Length: 410
Ligand SMILES: Cc1ncc(COP(=O)(O)O)c(C=O)c1O
Ligand SMILES: [Zn+2]
Image (cartoon, rainbow, N blue to C red; front, side):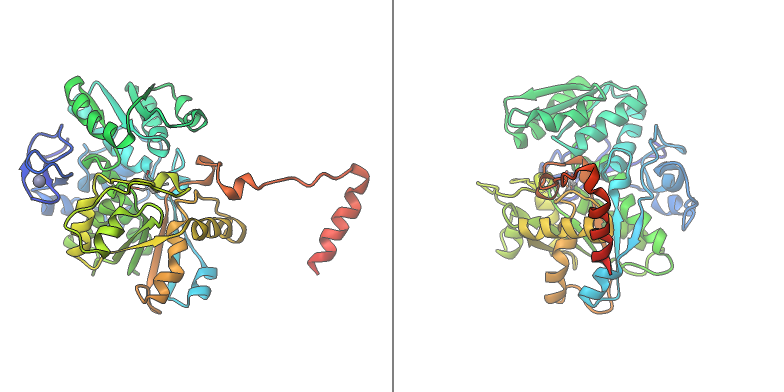
């Protein structure tokens, strides 16, 4: 770890120098990385950054890593694509799609894993781990292989084996435990501390430092224009907090005039943070019967839910829900009209746009960025992909079939 960082509780503000902790020793909520020498760090930052091979090349002063960071697979610098279609449909200033599916293992998780692995090496962790069924498990297993660090992936007994293939190819220790997924998250923190395994779960403070580079990359790309609204799918809460942190640090550094409105999107069938916010509850409550096909954002009791709730109340950030139908429709149209195949979960941000526009959370002059968090091929078991069928045609019929195809074009 470069010049000292410490961890500060995102809710009660208690601080600790024990970098092996992920949650607050006082109140149990998530911790975040704090840079006591923030101003000196900012002085060492190039803005906008020169292109580089990994996150540390571009943003080392704002990350808890040594100059060049640790092993990289070339994460970040995802394509930021303008969508004239969505701009016309919504009647708003500009809409950009941040295609995080272009990351090495197909999701934004690679940003967080890259920084997490780098910190794990400098802390002398014996191994890294994750409690995950999908994107994060694949990401941690891949970066562990790159770093030559052993990895442990814990999955709940309810996870089907076909979801584990994209994880197993990297040959981590893959353990399927008879235990609820949410409980395993807390178990892993305790067991990880006992055995020297750094579990880089969804809202781990060092993971979030990597994921905040979503905000840094987006602002660097748009510079000197700036986003006014950022929309992101919301599950554990980690990524929304990470994006907010990145934006706030840019503002504090004098590199961004104003923090955009960050809007988290939850599936209507599993929306504990939205529920607590709209009903003005003091804390999130568990969703007893989660019901959505968006598996990556189906989290009935998000471990950073209370911190997101505090962020919603302390800023102009907001939260919205979308139905499965809206996600699947947005997913299909992103593929067929924009050439972007994303997971249904990742289409949530785009699915929310019509409602955000109708409710004036997005206005006519806004510059909107939707974070498309993961590639479609990471989760092919979705309606859009399962409905795929090839039309059988005899070789003799082929010219006539093509003639008909071209004829229909005119
Ligand atoms: C594709 C995808 N989108 C969004 C999310 C939600 O991120 P978070 O859990 O940090 O809120 C995840 C988390 O696993 C994900 O895999
Ligand atoms: Zn605390």
